[in-house]
Length: 314
Image (cartoon, rainbow, N blue to C red; front, side, top):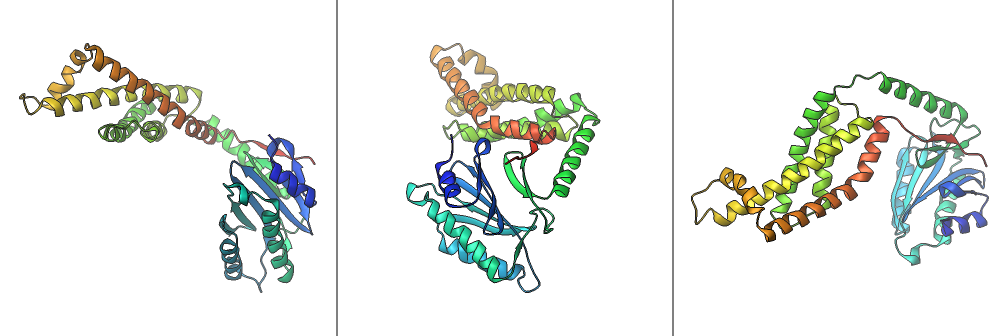
């Protein structure tokens, strides 16, 4: 769905609306500007080159003033060769094109007053810029930097393809990592909660352990770590039930935790216990899948250098 706020800004400026990416790019009053959008956040990139008269301290003071003036401008920083702003208008009264236009005009006025010129957001060279897509973000960059980034990605992809894959070590590491993540799950379960963060902890620790012990996070690595996560979620629920049994019966019976653990299968024969256990397990799997999907996808893309990279034609 097209971002109406960006469309309104495009109609009031010389910026071009990139339909497929919901972004604005182009020159406005002689300065390159890029605005990327995601739910409730607008990422403004304003590449300018500092001078000997206007150093980083002056720039930081100006940016601090911007965040003070504009309530929903919650991030403002000068990185490499560009100003990076994050505007987060969660409420309708802040989702107005006039506010973002006012921010942009402040940037331009400051730059004109201090003789700052637009430049490449990557290398800082004063040259013609072309927008390109890097993952899901459009950046203003010169041709040389685009070529350099493209070559670097190709090198990383080639290095990954020739990287050895220790599946056995990865499995061992995955189980160790998932076991550590299970501690978080069990701790939260003892507070009578089933939290998505617990499932995410198991998934993250499993993947990190798998990679640390030499497993390559390719498709087979994703399958293996997913299976380990499924097993460990079940075991975490199993151990949580054993802890509940031990806590309930330790006063009246001379039992230890391992006695309670061995008694879990007998308790699961009871319809009410089995029903509650299955419900908790299914909810746990649902939460784990929902919380982990984005992280697993991100980890896979990063590990395999599957990065979207293409020039945007306007």
